[in-house]
Every structure is written in C-alpha cells, then in structure tokens.
Length: 140
Ligand code: RTP
Ligand code: MG
Image (cartoon, rainbow, N blue to C red):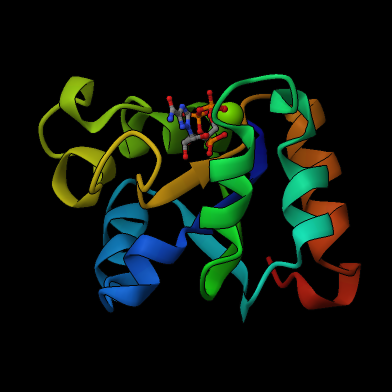
C-alpha cells in the first residue's frame, strides 16, 4: 500500500492546555508518523485563507478568532491511508458525537475548540502542506 501524507493542526485550545504531546501520542499510536512539525501563531489572513471554504458560514468569524487566539502546532503526518486514518483518530467535529478514544472525544472543549484539524482529501492535503511547509522541512 502506498504511503500518504496529510496535514494536521493541534489547535489553540490544546496547546493552551499543554496537550500537544498527548495528541501526538494518539497520532503515533494510530500509525501516523510526524514527518514535519512547527509551532506558529496563525495570522488572520492565514486562518481566513485556511478556512476559506467556510467563509459564508455563521461560525466563520468566531472560527478565525479562535484559530488566531494562541499558538498552534502545524504538522505533516505520513502513513498508510494517512488522510482517512487521521480523520478517524480525530473523531467527529462535535466532540459530543465523537467516538470514544478519539482525540476530540478525549480533549475537545466544544464543537469549535475541538483540539485538532485534519485534511479532508488528498487535494486539500497537498494544498495545506504546501501553504505551511517547504519541501526541505519534511523529513519522511
Ligand atoms: P477541520 O476542518 O478543522 O479538520 O474540522 P472538520 O473538517 O471536522 O469540520 P469543518 O466542518 O471543516 O469545520 C471546521 C472547524 O470549524 C469549527 N466549527 N465550529 N460553531 C460551529 O458550529 C462550528 N462548526 C465547525 C470547528 O473548529 C471545526 O473543526
Ligand atoms: Mg474541515
């Protein structure tokens, strides 16, 4: 089976509570390798661009405020079926609906402050990785 890469974010609610290591442990236990990682603060433009698909949604402004409210850890994850596997270990967007043992069921505060992002398609994974990382920063 082919190795796949996906883009992941440890969101501000998780970095604020010092949960990066615990989130990373769950990713690694799910068979995902962290092949690039850095801690940044997203600008408003970063967040608006990143979640541009949601710009007409009622939660868009709150989401941009949240994503710029503190540091995030942006990551590239590698593994077999990495995109689907990461979405599985993250769990549903709303932690109340997330399966037991998932990152969001375990750590999320609410539907917005839900601790993790993961790309939803191969096309978006490639776009998101290229926005935050140069090729030499990714060591597979
Ligand atoms: P993500 O893009 O962050 O991986 O999350 P997702 O695919 O599970 O969910 P999506 O529908 O793409 O929503 C993006 C993020 O927006 C926030 N959100 N808030 N207040 C609300 O009703 C609401 N709905 C979504 C969450 O932070 C969600 O992850
Ligand atoms: Mg999404």
